[in-house]
Length: 367
Image 1 (cartoon, helix red, strand yellow):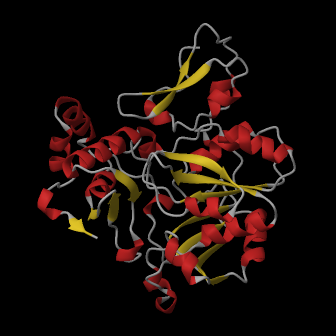
Image 2 (spheres, helix red, strand yellow):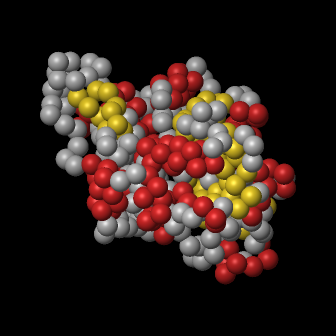
């Protein structure tokens, strides 16, 4: 087997192929943009074709729910939970329910070393680490295998992530009993390069001559609808929009994000969540600057979750007034994406920051 995908727009990096290979002939390797792709070890490969046949990027390989059964606007009643969540707190309401059922929750965290990765949680303290946006491609590590083990041990499992990550999980579990599996995907704008994220952290530490110990990709203290990031250094806090600029420019998104087969209303998870942009037009009285979640209830399992948490949330039924582009189409690739990466390879990072992130030293705000 020479390769699994035709070009990089056909691989989301979910790593399912690595785990389903019966010969251990696939490993994930980073390319020059910092994204991981499957690499076939030719001396181990037996040309069975299983990796290509079951590729999770192909929609036809994944069981999915068709159109949502219900669309809701949601706010968790616990105001402290809502303030500390990214939008209206729907995810934490679901996770709290799974914990009460003695279950396990999988999600994405920002680790002590500022790496973004998926991990397992069985306590409220650990689940709280999943709160907040992380605008970087998550390292899935070995969580698919851990999910499989938890399900085989009879545990209820909630797995949260992007649609392509859930597609990868479903590929791994294709022949397993998934009765106790609940999936929750986020409305994804696209996943930024871990390499550029790391270069950004290094650049800001060098400029400030201080070590960053935490990144808040969207600091809610500025308001739910405001997108400002806050960098916590050892000796100060600064608010910026630099990484935000890089993210929304789309230059640093994974190539497959521009070809995403999951950016539509045909969902593959039990529940889909995101920010309810446009809530003012749908129901002005339900708007809250502490956040409102847009929730797509896609399956019978999703309906079961909502039924079990309805006393913990305020909700309204929604029709059409929500502004989420990625429920209708993938993010658009910028015409000068290649120019960005050529600039990255040929210049220092400050050049990138000034040209693409509007970097100015005097524009930093102390928090």
